[in-house]
Amino acid sequence: MSTRKRHLYLLGISVTVIATGVVALIDRQFAIPLLRALIPGLAQVGPLSAISFLLCGAWLWLYQAKSKPAIALAILSSLTAALGAYLLIASVATDHMAASVATTILLSGVAMITTGIQRKWVQIVRQLIIIVSFSVVYLSLLGFIFEAQQAYPIPGFTPMDLITALVFLVFNIGLFLSNTGYWVAKTFTVPFIGGRLLRRLIPLMLVLPALTGYLRTLGERRGLFSSELGIQLHTLVFTAAIFGFIILFAALENKRQSYKIQAKMQLAANERKLRTLFNTIKDGIVNISEEGKILYCNPGFCSITGYAEEELLGKNGLNAVLNLAGLGRFINNYPPNNMEKKFSFANYAAVNQAIEDFYGVRGSKGLLLRCGKVTLSHALAMYTAFAGIGNLGMRLMPQSMKVKITLTVIAQTFRTISDQTSKVTEEADAYIFENETCSMCWHRTSSQPCCHVATGVLIEALHWATGKNYRVTEVECMAMGAPTCRFVIDKQSIE
Image 1: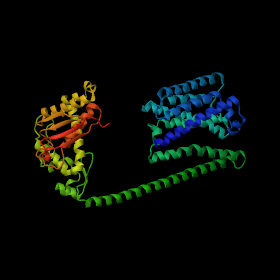
Image 2: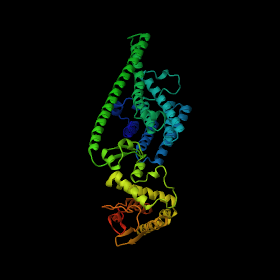
Image 3: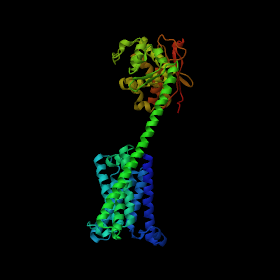
C-alpha cells in the first residue's frame, strides 16, 4: 500500500467520522424526520458518542496532515481517553451507557495517545489495543446481523447502537493505518505478495463468515432446512468462497509476474541494443560501481587504456588509473597519510592525466571536481589551519571578509604542507587565486585548463565558510603555457 493511498484512506475515514458526529448532534438537537428516515438508527446515537466521533475524526484529520500539530493531537487524544474513562465509570455505576461504547472510546483514546511513540513494544501493545477495540465493535455488529443482541454472555457489551458500532469499526481501521512501521500493520501495508494477500484476505474473512452465518440463520428460522443441513451448507459455501478467492488471487499474481517477466525481457533487449551501440562508438565508455569496480567498458575504452576487456572487468578503477599513470608500484601500497612530502608533483600530475585519459576530458572534469571537494572535507578534519575556516568567529564576519580569509588560509596551507606556491589578490569584482607552482598540471600540456581538483577545493572551502556557492573559474593554466594557474572567484555568490 502506497503512502499516498494510505493518506487518502485516513482522510476519507476522518471525514466520515466527523460528518457522522455532526449529523448525530444536529439530529439530537432538532430531531429532523428526514435525517432519521435516511439514516436508520441515528436516533439511538447518544450526544457523548457523537462528541467522541468529533474528537476521533478531528484527531485523524490532523494526524494525516503534513504538519501533524503535536499539541492539538495530544489534547484530542487525551480528551478522548478521559471521556472514555468517565463513560466507563458511569456505565458501571448507573448503567446509563453501554459499557461496550465506553470501553471502545477509552481504548481508542489510548491508541491515539501512543501512536507517535516510535518504540516497537509500545506499537505492538497499541495494535493489540486496536484489535481488542475492533473485536468489541465487531461483536456488536454480529449481534445486529444475527438479531441476537441479547444472546451474548458478556454483560454490558450488547446494547451498542448500530451507527456507533459502524463508526468505530471504520475509525479502528484508521487507527490501524495511522502507524504502519511495526508488527501486523507493517505486514499489512508492505508492497510484497504477503502484504497484498493479507489486504485481500482480511476483509473476506470479516465479511464472509458473517454473511454465510446470517444466511444459515435466516434459512433455519424460516424452515427452509434443518440445523444439520444448515451447518453443511455453511461449511460448503465458506470452503467454496475461500477456494475461489485463492484461485483468483493466484491468477492475478500470475498475471502480475507475467508482466514483470515481459518487462525484464524488454529491458534485456534494450540493454543489448545499447551495448551494441556503445561497442561501435570510438570514444571510451566505462561503467564503474560505487565501490570502484569496472562493470562494463567498450572497445574504445580498451584501446585508450591498452587493456583487454577481461583484464578490466571487476578490477578496481583506481588500479587501472595507477597502471595507466605508470605508478603500478602504488597499487595496494598507497603513500602514508601524513605530512611527509613522499608523493611528488610529477606523480600527482600523472594521476590527473591518467584520470583524464581514463574517463575522457568531459567525464574526468566532474570526477576531479568531486575529488577536490572530498579533499577539502578530509583536510577540515585533519588540519587545524583548515578547521579555522568554519569556526564561530569566522561565521560572524561579513561575507566578503569570509571569502578573502578563506582563500588566504588555503594559499598559506598549500605553502606549508606542500611545495605548491599560491597567492591571493583582489580586483574590483573578483578575487584572484594563483598557483605559481601546480601539482595538477606539473609538466603537462593541455589545450584547456585542467586543474579541476584545485577548483573543487576552492568551491567546497567557500561553501563551508560562507554557506553559499561561489563561481570559481580557472582562466589560465600552466599546462596551456601561462606563467601561473589563475582562478577567478566572483565576489557575488551564485544564490
